[in-house]
Image (tube, rainbow, N blue to C red; front, side):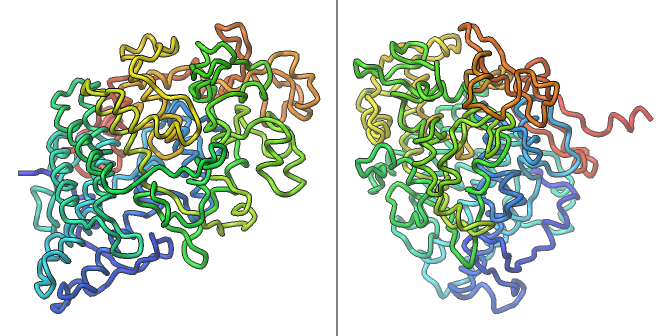
Length: 619
């Protein structure tokens, strides 16, 4: 028997509300007449109920696997793509709304009492899905094909929900039917092992793939392509997690990833490429309507008068920034035409900020604002913004960054000008680029990544930005020589980091690869030598070490092994190197909230985290 939910779930699992939500996904409106004897009869009934599943899955404040951009301007700061990236080694933040993410990355987060910002121990969506799956076949007047389309949507969301829960908490309650107050054994039961849960996840997504149509069948409704893309993500995540955490049985999931990708690669999706390497990557994240884009498999729709957001308004306006570690992973194209890591490059220089961005993978200057007036002028239309010199650091007026690397992925001036909660460009939830990267990585993990595989995957992405191709035997980047993986896997992981940054994936990539120790490393920003503090370009930035008249943003620097000096992002803060930690026996999973365990002790707690009983036992 599958043991599942504690009494803390009774309200969420029994009281199902199906009211419309102003913050809904595509403004789909569910129904209230679930107990009507005439319900579950028509396609309109199935569609209305399925719309409620979309609606709740996209809840900005509850679940974090389908967030996209927030419509609430404060929430976009708390759990938007920038703050979620700060859980990883790609991004740093000191903005008050995002320090929870910096604490997770530093290994010093507080034990939550209730639901934390990074996730939610909430189960209303699951009950909503299970109610549908128990009732949809009552619509006997409809063909089986029509009924299965809506069931495929429900199964897709159940698979995605449980992937998210397992990623966050490991073992979780597994339930595949709706519970009532009489289901005492299940309501008060312990958690189910992750392997059993993930078996159900794979079963659910396989069925969803068989039920959903390949063609479009509604206003951005799920298709078989979306289900296959989720299957590929599930297979790669669980397969590599099992491999690198030594859980065993990884081949089934890696092969599931491969089969899903191969099917998708024959369905007509393609990489968006107009032949403009300086802008095509940017266009994926700044386009008002993604529906015609053949790279985008499933997206979150925003529209004036319905659902809007404010991502651009905060892109350059918070105390955060990209990390040197991330920027260093963008390859250099040397004069001989070969793409090399910075440690192997013949021509790389970071003597000035402008030089650091010269002859790099074009995705660097489409992810972070290239330094200098020309870059600012190209990005901003109005003179007030364009006249500024970037980078801006410390207490400089006008959007200073914590690291010197200003994030601009998703930023477009035309949307920013719309103002508070009025931006409408769409967010890609699944795109073909991820599928190609998943395929290359899974094949490499299975020892089957040939040049042909690279040419169909990694090199297609590189063609978009006019980067030299990857071959099967690249030179090992010294930065990763001690990680115990092949140079080919290093380059595939690099490509993934560069291509998919700020898409809610990097943190879980580190977790599945068992690379948590990377979060312990000193978090550095742009190079900044002592002489630079007198440079007029940094007028308004405070003195090194910033004590007397330091203001809000003192600048500390660190001399690295290369003898150069870099901004030390977190020095003299709670997230400084001396305080950073990563406990592999604890920090690969997040803690179950104490308020949850107090209502069902049989759930237990993840290793290393307090249960909340310690203080009671002392008394």
